[in-house]
Length: 302
Image 1 (cartoon, rainbow, N blue to C red):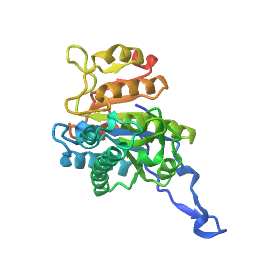
Image 2: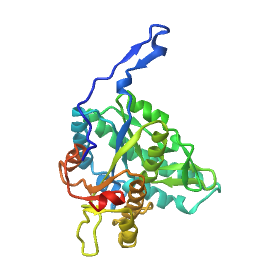
Image 3: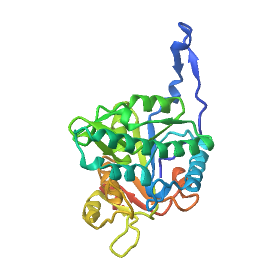
Image 4: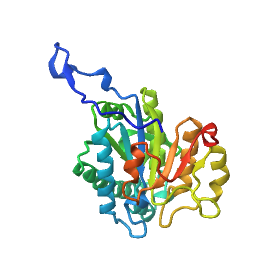
């Protein structure tokens, strides 16, 4: 597929001989120029019908599959995960979605953020247990929003984490908003912000993998659509049903919209099922797996 990483290099910092540790230099060959984004869906890693219930075994298995790729290749990936039955449930219960700049927003922000952090800690612990040097990226600290959209995104720490060989891990989070007081930013929204921010730092995105609990995008007959162009995605959006359970960010519908926008920029996506053991590992290695590829118009028709 043309995007899998090559053999992993050993990157080391060196002294410049002038002022000691404050003048460490990165080997230019190790500076990151491109990445693959991977989202682990909230419906995959949590039970969305049971509040605050993580699927520990699924998280551990996915972490091992990512580790196998990271250990054998450069590991130039940015990971993200949904909030599933943690952040989504807290946001709904606290009424955060219905509040704006009044005093009651503070408790909703606190409850939602802590719930999102609780799941994030479980995911990063599993990744570290699998041997991955994670670098947490909390959207609430990385940017603010304006009218519900990310603004002033701080992508340099993410790029520098990639440069030293760490794996950035982000998640859907509550973010302070200049107009609304606070807003919920889904992982899809966070990915778009980081993709733009990294691009301004000279790092391009080769591909985005959306790992969920369905085979991909289904047509009216329940069959998986193998390839989806932006125009075809527009036609299908009204037919995409959100997954069962509570999902305040719009589920699959939101994912398809995001993949469509990325495809128009030349960034392909794969929407596939992470319930099958080994599928994420194969997808990371560039192997053909079942699912829905969302491609720019010329690639979707060839």
